[in-house]
Length: 283
Picture 1: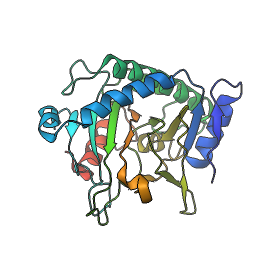
Picture 2: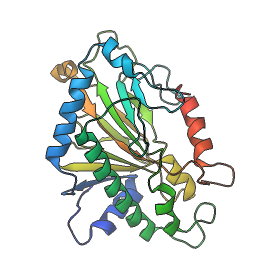
Picture 3: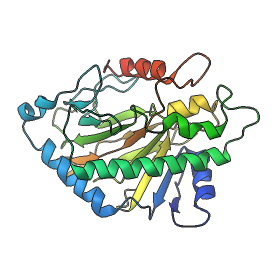
Picture 4: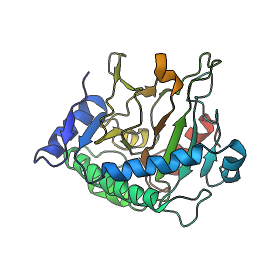
């Protein structure tokens, strides 16, 4: 399975991107308005943060009530996994007034750009989603923008995967999982390792071109659309050889709906999120 690279500036970008998402659950955009220099600047800022000793980082330890801040190593275990992932990470919610962890102006600027792009992509997917029979709980796609606009649950996560420890055992950088949210936008990471599973259960590498933004559907959009858009399983595998001695950084933006959004007759977005966080051991 090859995930096509779609030029954001091309006239047929929405249609080609929709086809990629519908076929694979993933899409890759290039030449967007999210600039490479800004992405690199933000990576440098966060590399300095993670280079601090644990005591310094723990001053910003995550607040379990609001779920933002710094999460130390082995804070997250993927649903169904036996061991925790080999990563530490930080959470920042760009639409909240306060934050446990301080962020730079560059990070704020990047979050704004990624959220703008996410809203536009959501419009593309709205335009291609059938409205008869109704998706989700009777919502029409025109409601989606209101569901996510300025949502306080939209999350920016910066992940540091350190060099592999000698005692890694069965642990991996990120075990196979699906994302919780509506859409995930991922500026190209600093190293390879991201893989996506196809419908036959085979794994395929996702490229790391420096100008690309990787996008995938999350479980909440899958639930809302009754499976018209599918959340695809993905993972980050451990590197081999010399690459095992190098760190990897990534920083996805998770576009979330407002807490009271009714995803199905049985569940709101808040109920669904709380359930998944408990499964991850974070609530």
